[in-house]
Length: 449
Image (cartoon, rainbow, N blue to C red; front, side, top):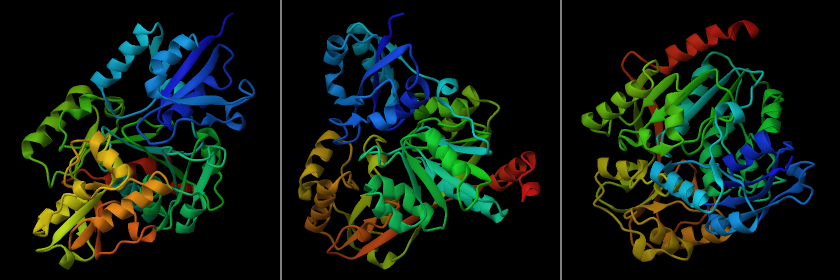
């Protein structure tokens, strides 16, 4: 039987997971290439032979997605598997049309084909868009479980942008581990808030090996917490599925892939940021939840903001630096730093675009909706230098750091800085404490200790 030639269309995350779980040891298929998008400079590599398995002794090349049409024809491809997240349905099907027109099938792998079963109870935290508040929700879940004397190990959606062999299984327990693993800003934004609270978090490339390591963590493990990325669905079969929605982008929960999958599979739907959204937009999101997943429990929550040095904002001309992915492929124009600037009476939010240096110029050209905020781009050493140069060149009184990691730890900023922190605060009678108490009882977790 002739093997089908496969291209996996990805962005250094879900694509590798789909390969590992569905294609790696499957004699029916021959994966001839990956393509890469969304993240700068992740093409031109190989998925290494050490991770690719016995069927791929030379590894698998990774090309830029722009080459896809040519690759389909040159490599005689039968099927292209779409394997990354947070794309509008129109863009997904534009890509599907390109693939079909070039002669190949367009494939989407589902939950049954790609989710791994754990021997520990799993709670997943996913979202309908990038930047809805997954991280603060994950922190709230972990803090609640810790109060019940449970050991929680978090596993984060992949961000392997460097040496894939070295990044196969990563364990983060301290801030020093971030440097050890040569993390990008995007990685530090997700890992640092966990480790500074004393929580263990895993990530990497091979999520079956990662799960085994987490289940057997030397510090113990009672519960696995899947901390999702973008709006992707969980890599593990959840025993409790939580999905976070954003009323600042009403309707997006039914328009972006695979966010609607997260919504339709949610046991708990959290409408976040209700303190800064309109009642009309909140109602749209709530009605959409009830339309596609009427059995999901709905919790409403505020994204509460605190600032360590508010005196640096009031009456001052400020530069706001926000979480990069939230602004770029998340398509947001503001973040927590912008909200803090407005609430605390900044005299002006300075437009960073005239001061952009190096790769940040390209970022603003590509993401034209980003105007008066600076995305914390730092996928490599050069881009990190460009971020530092842009901040230091900007004519402002102070810098508001709205990204969840301490930028001053990795770059030198020549102006006063203040950090913004944000946490999940449920309102009303429905809350995570009640949900998680029930979860603990169902899985008899207290009796195991």
